[in-house]
Length: 468
Ligand code: PFF
Image 1 (cartoon, rainbow, N blue to C red):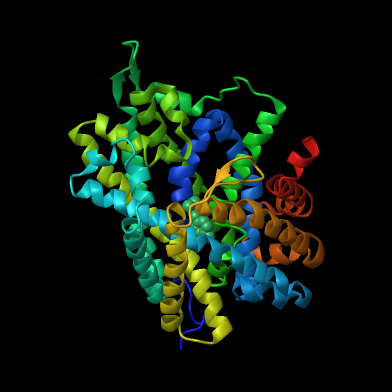
Image 2 (spheres, rainbow, N blue to C red; image 1 turned 90 degrees about the horizontal axis):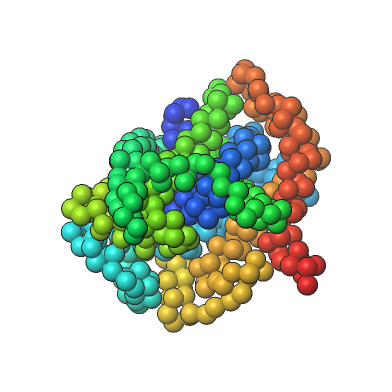
């Protein structure tokens, strides 16, 4: 029987690619560009970058170091350090369990679009109402979700080295190549706007990177900050046990300091490049109004952009959605791996049996989420003012509510109970120095917990209540 103690990544590159595979996902390619478009382009970029090297770095270091030092999954890691904190492990386990239910639904949507483009039916995807008709239909989203989930379970079933690492080694370089390629292509586009003036990809790029301070107020800036912060969690896959699990597979002689910087850079670079592919392309064909489409940017606006490009757009659409499928798969593999590794611990069962069981349970749960667009349809007002259906509600509970809360508790635990030195020692266990030690200590003790508390209160709707 395989247990986590015998599983490990073969080396630094394997770890970096697998962890970057987890980090780079739908969040980078779908969410990041539309947030950047909505939140003042370059302004969002600057804020996000500042947060990555401070908060992102702190949370990533904490998770991976806890995993490697304890050699435990999140479920037992906290309890193995201090018995009274075992509850935090259980709380952390909830996040991937919730995310798994809807991530595979979105994964299924992406597979659907890939199939449409590969089979030469990309123009249909650009028709009005296509996306809504698809997600509200009963059978099709379920079928594609199952395909996506089956592949995820297969990779996890194969194990850490032969499954996760091998898959990431094949997919991640290809993904990077495609993002760079489409990004550069996007800059070369041009088309006349409504007033006859030529709009170029380069103009669109400037809209993306130049900070727009139009109409900025303190409260709007705070909103940008909060958007960037919650994006950061989701994007780096931190505070959900995943990086603790992956950390537990990292060998002691690996220089964590360097590997973690590479993961941060990889994740941020792909997010930036995703914006560079999408924003200029949408701008060229639909102007600044086209960019304000929010979450529908990838599934509604982008197919229209591909259509406007003619034949080349159909090929590009296929490459684009293949890339997104890769990104989504490596992320969903990491979510399922965390669930499987934890359940192997709880039930003392083999990886193969647990992978199959988790695969089936996830399928049942994801089915309910799919039906959230027809049989179980409802609309609910969230504390942040937006209207949610079942999928959005799950997303809100895991990302906006649980993650800041878990991060807050983790910061208190590491910063004040076990003390930052405990982590710093692990960062230096391979004999390399921890270059951002001072920054880490200040961040984990003071800055991060305060920010997490603010984020949590905001997500819980407390600020709205005060305003009333
Ligand atoms: N970080 C991934 C993304 O940006 O899409 C998504 C993700 C992976 C979220 C793993 C949550 C998770 F547990």
